[in-house]
Length: 216
Image 1 (cartoon, rainbow, N blue to C red):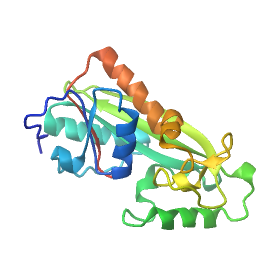
Image 2 (tube, rainbow, N blue to C red):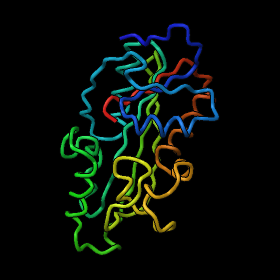
Image 3 (cartoon, rainbow, N blue to C red):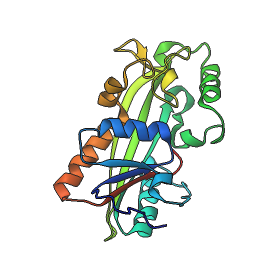
Image 4 (spheres, rainbow, N blue to C red):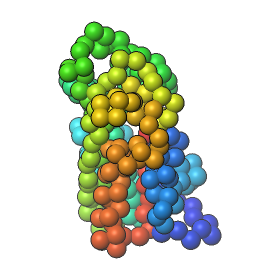
């Protein structure tokens, strides 16, 4: 469906179903002119088959689908947790790992069980985020960034969402769910990728922008 703006005078709109993600994006962009909306708030009803083999492909599929529906420059992201001991799983399947309806508390416990007894030096992992921008003329550009760390031995922290409570940051001695949201946004995969893409859009003079991530 077309994005319903009503009387809102905005240049950039970011939309997502994922409440944790939209709150994080809003915090990252709080000092900018970008307005962040959820998919429901934006009035979209688009289900994209994320069948790409990379984060960039999935982000591009989502951006392209909403760009074609709205006629506006559209951004989308795809992100995931890569665990080296598990051959970089769950990776691009992170949001679908154990099913969309399964709580992250259950998912996190499952991962810790899979890594039971594995020493720290073999628990290396990273969060990956790719952001794609689709232009009405058919162009698509992408950026990617990461946050390196390792899988903790236990769930810890109340901040963040998703896999944050099991993602340990050795240089801070805390999980990404134990550091402040402000600190996380400075170093996170999503924060770094989002700032890079926003700078690129400024260079291109791009306005009227949607951001969509239907499945979080």
